[in-house]
Length: 271
Length: 258
Image (cartoon, rainbow over all chains, first blue to last red; front, side, top):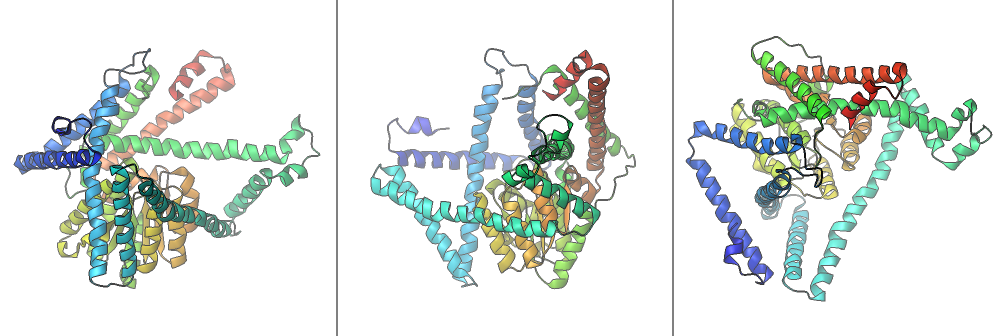
């Protein structure tokens, strides 16, 4: 908020970073102090009022008809930009707490030499290596800085992520084996449906029923058409049925949260 | 951003009215019946199992930020932590979002306090792992194997990491209860978990577990809202089948879906 008043345009990036950090701390401290000043019996009411006002912005924005030329109404830009920025700032505060929790947990592991303490050491190494190389890249345009950052990102972040993703293929096989074991009528039906869908998706499936005509009643029995029918009719019907329930459940939950009726299920007492 | 047209505004208004009406009638003391959901009954069984084995439990609230599925997951976390506090069993909560982490920590602390066991709360059991999907998944796998988790709960929005978590828990022999509104992940949970809560049952969980009148009323209101949607769908089928696809009634109903 005050950053643009204090820092002159063209100042180095690290000055901007420090000014933004200071701004966050001052604003956060002021908000915290103001909230502490509110008597405790009014604090819940204040939280409920802020929640209601925040929800009201999006509700009014959704229901007020937009200008046909721009597709926006008087609240669209406020809801899209300003509110999103506020949410981003609040999330940044919480990110600090998250990182503190992570470092505290692994710091204790290291200090007490708990089992697997070397993993905690690896975390500290990776964390500070990424942090420092990020700052180094931000402060200058040196090729060494960006190469180091790229190497750490590809070697320490992207590669293990891809490895974890590839593990899913093996887990799918073991899960499918259990799912397709014939133990009941439903499991048999599912096995048969899955067999047809898999067969209909590969060339050999099409080949098996290639003798059937491509038009007329008998074309419905071609493997690729049976496959499509299973996916588009019974499967889609079940999918939409579940979706209706999920969306109405989400609407009810959103209403309870917006009107602060849900608090009792998170904390000791309802408002 | 999307905006409501007139039919959507009317439909939304009807659904909201039904839900709020049932909430307020429940608050006035009307007795409401809700059906049994085995997956939610299994929560106590899972906590009991962990207590008997003397091992901790893990509760994953999904990988989304603080949105509706995550809020619902956190309300279930509150119940699980309360039961765990009664049985003096640890619940490890790995989180993937820093805001969810802070809220989960407060909820856990409050649950232990309200059960009269504040000394049992251990801040190290509520952990922020990473914002990255697969880094979070590998962190959870590490907790499942290193801590020898006896019971694992997975509630919230899950994506590709769902199967990694559920299969590891299954291989570890943990009792697993899962619930998600992510339709694509439901089959994976069904094959790997002991109990799976699907579809709108996920959003019924807080009402079912707490039996608070507000939440029970909301649940019954949801059923009424579903009834309204079924009426719209049946009217659409009749209009298309009997009156023809060009009939005015069908074009009016189809605007509800736009």
